Length: 436
Image (cartoon, rainbow, N blue to C red):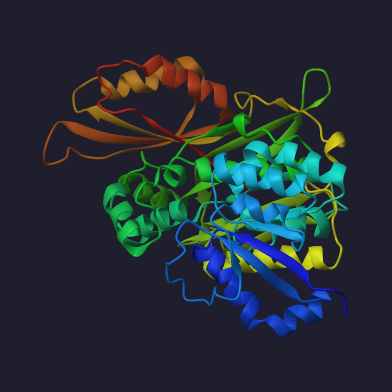
């Protein structure tokens, strides 16, 4: 049997401790599948004395994690620290610069710096693996890079953030409003004390930018992701969607279109959508992730599972270590970095579809006429309209509309015409309807 794969592990939080526990529990199985032992030799974290439920005394401890990359007895560095920049990026650059393979679960770092890190790894003939950075234990990166490699990917979309999905599906089941459900998610450990990255869509946008680069051969363009979160969604929106035959989900979606010069343009967006109850994504509830990839020969492929947590994420990290132990390197983003295309950003305005609109308005004569006039002037045809009666306190009513299929720019124009209207007591909410 070959020499052990010697591992330095930075970050001993939930996932880092989970990696060690998995390596211990499945040691014999991993040795057989990898063809060699997976051996941790050094670790680093902020608190040396914290009890993590695993035996760390057998490993060399480094207060400065960057020292591990310089060790002669390390073959691969595992980065589980997190953060787009700072110590994590310094370690990643140091590891590759010292000739070590790199495994990371850091979606933010890969979304912001993955292109440069991939170029460094390829030039040095090193492995850069990040399966755990996208959708936790779901092997969607490997599936796109390998399983669907024969296909031209036409569209990638899905539920990419477990916290937001837990909140929306719990609102759906309980009828509670957003604030109450977020507080419960924090109590249950499904949401961070500061949940902004999750509920504002940033976490999903990081993952979408990575998937788009793999699926379409585009250079990673996180800044090109149009992002909208879920904080504006009310219990009334969930109820209206249910009445109309839909559920509400935060959807990340990326696809290509031909640009004016014939070159492809990439559309990347994260926003709440109405999903038909018959669609597979409508049945994804709780802190679960699901990714759909549509290939020109494979058709629709659905990947679903736990998007976070110690076990699933550790599983993805160790799967990458097994690949490295087997000598499988490959281009990090499926094709060599030099061949990845810097794609123009597609405009969504001309895309056609149906849209859900919700207005919170003053309860007085003429308001509904004002809104429908704005729709008419912008070329938006109303398919259905639901008006809620006056609430017990205040003079507000909710008006929900579904627009017929039409260009998205027309809906945007209608909302612009209504901007600043004293009839609106809160900003309107717009959600596209996921077709197909």
